[in-house]
Length: 116
Image 1 (cartoon, helix red, strand yellow):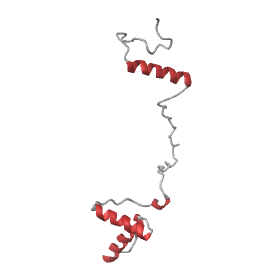
Image 2 (image 1 turned 180 degrees about the vertical axis):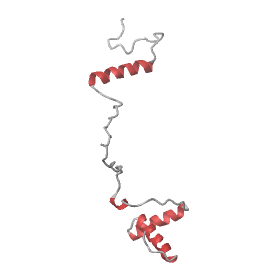
Image 3 (image 1 turned 135 degrees about the vertical axis):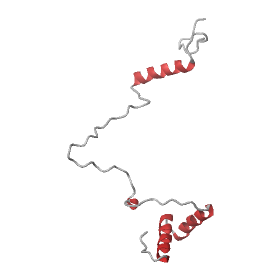
Image 4 (image 1 turned 90 degrees about the horizontal axis):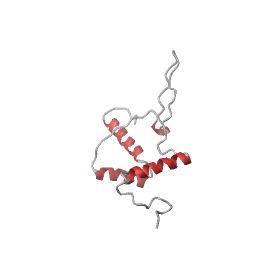
């Protein structure tokens, strides 16, 4: 009996070729044959701004309701966060509008305009 026709089931022990190297070599040959790129090369864009022209603003995708807003982060008890979430469900409002309402009440308490 000779070696199998497909060649992959032959005895490769002692040949000095690791299974990983052999696999990667086979993968590269398939990539070349099929025109596949596993790791596409990055596209280089010409980002030069002509002299005297203002630089374009950075492009940051944002939801319209967040335009012109900033983030305030606070740590609260998990039960407080759950209670805000439940209020949102009960009142059919999002948590952001509830927190904004709370901020406005805080501002009014201390004589500041409700701007949240």
